[in-house]
Image 1 (cartoon, rainbow, N blue to C red):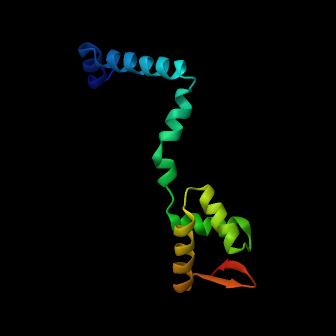
Image 2 (tube, rainbow, N blue to C red):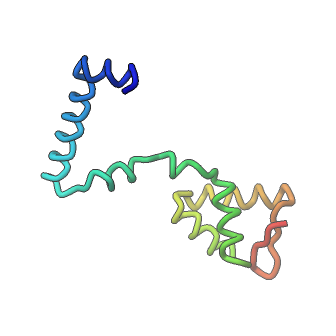
Amino acid sequence: MTDEFETAVKDGGIFEEADSRIDIEEELDERGLDLSQVEEAGDVSKKSSRSEVEIIEDAIDDLGSPTMEAVVERAGEDGVAREKAEKVIERLRKRGELVESGGTLRRI
């Protein structure tokens, strides 16, 4: 055992944490919720791990030669608001990183 673990056990902190987690699980269960789903839903690191620009770029790459509407819809599925997605697309166009031709978007 590590010193930190032994100290936590001696102080009772490790048991308090375990008891607290059990209480939370019981409370969620009573409400018909699953702890793992709640933790996943609350894990903002997954949601914020990609920037809005990356989400737009990934949508364009994944969809092939998509329309602007298709990219905006895909970005919306990944949590980017319509207005923000449109602004990001316009900014990428102005920077020369994206072109629209024949109604479809393409990364350069």
